[in-house]
Structures are given as C-alpha cells and as structure tokens.
Amino acid sequence: MSEPTLHFCTDPGEFLAAAGAYLAANPVVGTVVATLAHRMVARRADGFPPPDDDWWLVVRDASGAVVGAGMRAAPFAPRPPFLLPMPDEAAVALARVWHERGEEVRAVNGALPTVRRCAAEVTRLGGGRVEVAQHTRLHELGDLVQPARVPGALRVATDEDVDLTAEWFDAFMADADEQAGRPRGVSAHETPDRAELLRRIRGGRVWFWTDEAGRRVHLTAANPPSFGVARIGPVYTPPEQRGRGWASNAVAEVSRLLRAEGARVCLFTDQANPTSNRIYANLGYRPVVDMANLVVVP
Image 1 (tube, rainbow, N blue to C red):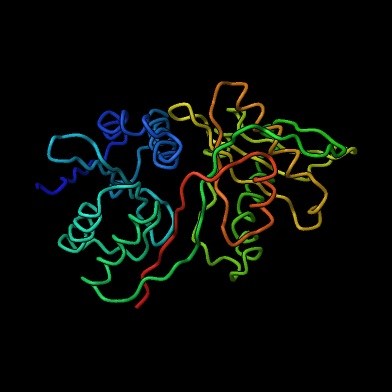
Image 2: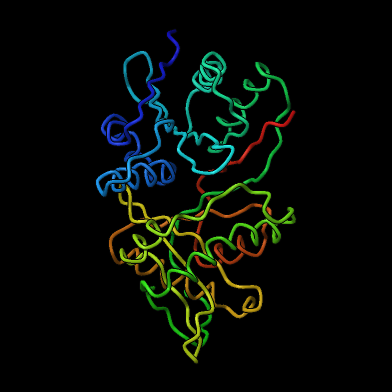
C-alpha cells in the first residue's frame, strides 16, 4: 500500500482550491483550518499578505483523494502546526519531513489521535517528551435551550469598542488558564491586531451583553461562517461580573442569530474548565471531537 503524500503550499487560496471539498465534507471538524484560511485570503485581498513561512498542508492517498489537512499559520510562539484528522502514516511522515528540513516544532495542536501520533514521532527523532498543555473539545449546537433570562440585552460592537475588545480578547486566555487550574498565561496565544479586530467588529461578529444601566459586562465573538459553519469565541466575562448569567444569555442569543443566518454553530471548550462545559451543555451544545495542544519539552 502506498503511503499518503504530503503537499505543502504557502498560498491559502491554493490550499482552499485543493482541500475545499474535503473541508466542506466535515466543516465542523475543519472549522479552525477553514476559518483561518478564509481569513488569510481576505487579508491578502486587503493588502496584508501572510508571512512567507506560513504553510498549508494537503494530504492525499494513493488515489489522489484528500484524506487530511493542516497548517502552520499561528502568529504566536512557538507557532504550533494545527492538524486535522489524517492517517497515522501521514502524521508520522509529517514529523519526518519537519526533521529532514530542519523545521523546529516545539508544539502541535489539533485533532486527536493525529497530533499525539505526530508529536510522538517528533520526540523520537529529536528527543524530548510530549506534554499536554490543554485538552479541548469541539461542540456543535443541537437544539438550542434558552437559559433563564437575566437583565440587559445583547448589542453589536462598534468601532468605539475596539480598545475594550482588544483588552478582553487578551484577558480571555489568561483567565481561561486560571479557571482550568493552569498558571496564568501558560497557553500560547496572541490577541488579533487592531486591523483584524476592526474587521470582525465591522463584520458584526463581536457582541457585548449590557446590563440594565447599559454597561458592557460581557463579550461574545464569532467567526464568519466557513463552509456553512460559524464558530463562537472568545466568550469572556470579567471576574467581577461572573456568576450572573451574562455568558449563558449572550451565547444563547448569538447562537440564535448565527443559526438564523443559516449557519451551523460550534465552539470549543477547555475540558479542564467544568463551568464553561456545563454552561454550553445546558444550552444544547454536544461534543463532536476531542483535540489537544501538545508541547515538546526537553
């Protein structure tokens, strides 16, 4: 049996042309790769070309059918590749390609068991050991369950909200680490730049829940649909505002709006955070696939 072949490209548009049908066939599982590829195509059209060292991966079997995909386009260190499900042979071959061309990979994110198999080969070839930085679970909305109503209302963000949006996007990951029992800031991430935040705001993809006095007490954002799937995130409530139902009501309303647009709706949860997992399960979100952020340590 022939091993799968790996095709790398630097143009996200070329990648979508090759892997679009594969991504569209399972658009919830492929949401991260599809969303970022479409975002990069849009940014390129606006005059912001992707970095030269970004790559997009198409995995094909012996017949030429696409059987996997991935990317290395994370803007934050250590720039972990993100892998979708692929045959074990392809995951191993990918680690070997990195090793042969001297591409240092100190973390691998994406679908299990693919990332575990790939990371194991990375350490076999280059030493070190694999540790789990974060276990995540991707969920899709089933029947939306309306939570108990709380005071206030959802409103779409405007340009005037960009500074607070940036602040809360940045706080989201650090607070998520703390809530999951990890040291604050251990999860690698980078707040989108101002241009990208304004793009999302002007696209109507950022919302605030405001209390009865009109104060912004919670933020929920979403990505534009890719292949009919819209992914919610981040979802952030400042510590002093938690436990009041803002998140449940905001996510429920945003979910309803996205579904009214005709999109399937999904989101990630941190498996170590029982609060968020409970909130989303109560709203009608159901597990689809487990993923992980793995790091290679000396």
